[in-house]
Length: 189
Image (cartoon, rainbow, N blue to C red; front, side):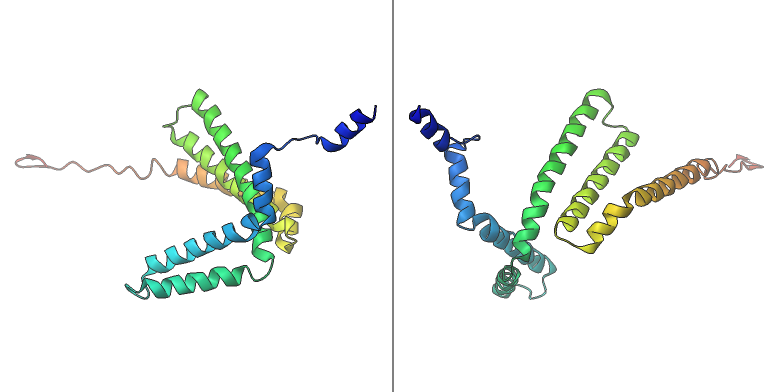
């Protein structure tokens, strides 16, 4: 009987395996909280500085600025906390968008502009939800405002889109101009 009790104490409900243990060790070492955010911020700042070409061909200055910004952004726990909130939500959002794309690809014409606009709208709504939920999880006041007023905003956006569609569909006939036909002494011009 005591063997069963010992077995239950050592077994977990969700065995992680070798990869799970490795990822847990990386997390404990700060790989996800510090190293990956550092590399991401460094790469983004360096890429932007290189693209802007402020210091011409002096990439060392770009590297020093990117290194400084990346280190300073990790000085406090704000960036790792923000990244730990937003990137899992981005993963879920991308999975949702991929699932919708697969379903739409099965039943609708992917070349249709209406389908593309609907997919764009779904993508914008998903990105907005990701940003709002991440802001709310970090305690930003705007996150709470969005949580309280999202129905009003969605309704206003829907009405705006409806007005744009109505105006756009009504003005389609007026844009077609008839070219006047002129019949001169040498024929039609």
